[in-house]
Image (cartoon, rainbow, N blue to C red; front, side, top):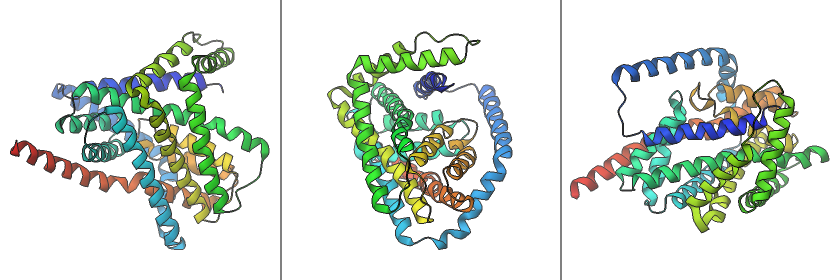
Length: 361
């Protein structure tokens, strides 16, 4: 709990930086400044990858063990990830009110792929998606407002997810079969939606959460500058999200909850595929930690940090070390590696489609 308030405030600042990058997408930085920035990020990325290289190499080396997994499990995980992407596309379509479905799908896939390979790629991926959406005919302001609201909502929900693990930790027990894992995925979706609806609909609930986080943070970090405005900032960001979605915020919240529930179910399926049966509540904590690690901008998509952190936390949750490494690799295969070539294809398709449309016009 020591840094929870700090992380929430840092998340708000991070998404403000992403918004500024989107808004500056059409501005060209001076060549010297752009070169120095790229060299700096490449140096930071290289140093960071060097530090996490042992864990990354160990996880990537698990590809040789893929033949131990049933093709049915691999197909299920592919379907779950496709469902998570479909929820994200629905969310973006709701937020931006108007782009065609092909424009939303292709721009999201391409922007997501760039974010996973470029140092500090979150802002670059958002900027690429912004350019593609504008090229498809969407007004720039609607694209900026929609992408910012989506980023804030998706990250806010994943920050709230650890709360759902508390009852399971207190109760104990393990997941014995796929049916229980599937039921848990549905329960996570319902609980996420209910929690999100309470925070979105009631000022008092969200302000209370902000005050609690602020009070705990200030007591535990007495020597640091006290935090004073966290409840107000949370309310302001909530109002920004609801202002973007309007009356459709319940559908947006359902899409966000589905996006994370299906992604979490992918990790559960990966663990079941390797024969591991840890406490689902501890797996949920490991999953949330992996999503936060993926936000670290020093490596693309948190590469290396996610692998090291997720493997370690799954091991602490009771998964044998070998199974934890293989489950992490399979999960990252579907959530990180396979979207890269798909994004490249989507970028080429989008460029050709809208180039031809411009020529015809």
